[in-house]
Image (cartoon, rainbow, N blue to C red; front, top):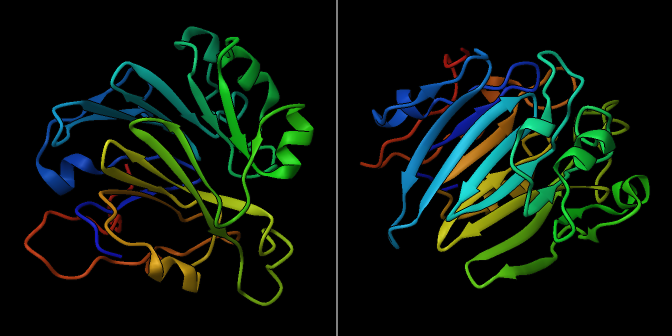
Length: 231
């Protein structure tokens, strides 16, 4: 994958390594597991990434709130009632540490759009269902592509079977964000191009080892493999 930044989300402790990769200033929140970074993209709009914990990510883009896999109960617990209401909520798959209906209800407003897989839509009772390979244009400047996320190691396929779960590529006014979901280093990942920021899962024994996380090609662009960046 061609990337400017490769950012690893550890699914026991979320970390954002933007500062180490880019030299940009990051703001550490009161909770040491929560860290944010702000990017101004070519159009002049700003994107703020907040790594909350595990697979939970908050993205603020041009005044809109995007939440990925919001979960309250995992330590440190998160009170989403204190967060702004979400315009979009993405849920990668139905495991309890990614699909939390209570957190979703805390973030919902009447116009919130929930994007997920078929099993999560049944659990939540609503949602736009996406399958691997589907595309949605959510706004003039927001597009989402659902991509594969699954296990390949013999004996681990039961955790995340092929075709059930999603990873997501968010294109925010041309700025491309890859959210891998729970997956191993699958062949389909090699076809994902022109990613600006990537969140990759490294939670053993269910997903990738740090050594399996794909490294970007050598280039003059700042990048980070995520290895050695556990905060």
